[in-house]
Amino acid sequence: MAKKELPVYNIGKFHGEHQEDSFYANNLKEHLEKHHFIHVPHKHDFYLSILFTKGSGTHDIDFTSYPVKPGYVFLLSPGQTHDWKLSKDVEGYIFFHTKAFYDEAYTNATIRQFPFFQSIYASPLVVLKGQSLATLTQLFRDIVAEQLAQKPLKQQKLLALTNYIYVELSRCSLPVAEAGHREVHYLARVRELEGLVDLHYKTLKSPRDYAALMSMTEKHLNRICKATLNKTTGQLIVDRVILEARRLLVQTQLPVNRVAELLGYMDNSYFSRLFKKQSGESPLAFQAKYRH
Image 1 (cartoon, rainbow, N blue to C red):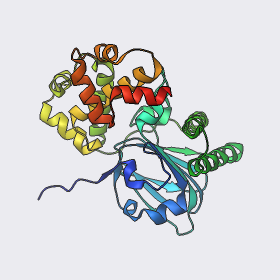
Image 2 (cartoon, rainbow, N blue to C red; image 1 turned 60 degrees about the vertical axis):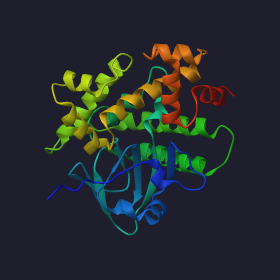
Image 3 (cartoon, one colour; image 1 turned 90 degrees about the vertical axis):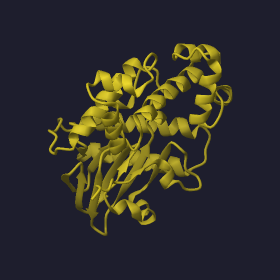
């Protein structure tokens, strides 16, 4: 009998009327009531943060069980498996966002600079006490309030609050924990692949190239990516290329043909078609929107 794969959810699964494509925030009680499908084991393709302020239970992440208590913050990277058993009186706050939401805003920083997102061997749990708990609780409240409000510069404030929360949590974070189950190997290989793609995406576009660098077959590498992130190896490579394209289009004054050239595409028409397929708009339209 074939093994049934766990569902991998994207932010679109949680969209409401006023929520952004790349970001979501809510109080935990409402989140749990609205999205019943999250009460069984699943994965995400985004970064997720949860602060518990009341209640108890257990939270299983990559088959390691953690207690749920007030002041406990859990931070999950894309591809991690999790589920929970929570008491009826549980309360708290939750927010999550895509990799691009954070990485596109910074030239020399990425979401993986933070200790809890650097490695699968990092503990997903940060325990808050005293003033740290009070400070972070208010920040989580602020990010939920900002998400629900319709005010100017909303995206900028959400990004600033997200970064502030991650900085404060990094200062409180627990030491790196040891991995504890056999399937963690897949996540390790995906992190290795992401590192290689970061180094070579301008010159190497084929999954076959990365499979060779990792001493495995292209088929096996694709299987790892699908099981972990619900993406093919080719999609992961293209995602990295488009992320850099968006950065260059927004943060520089370079014309589209020069951006294409810097990313290894001599055929500007092909690059523009690829960008539009991935982004839903042409590079020129994307650039004009963000410059405006």
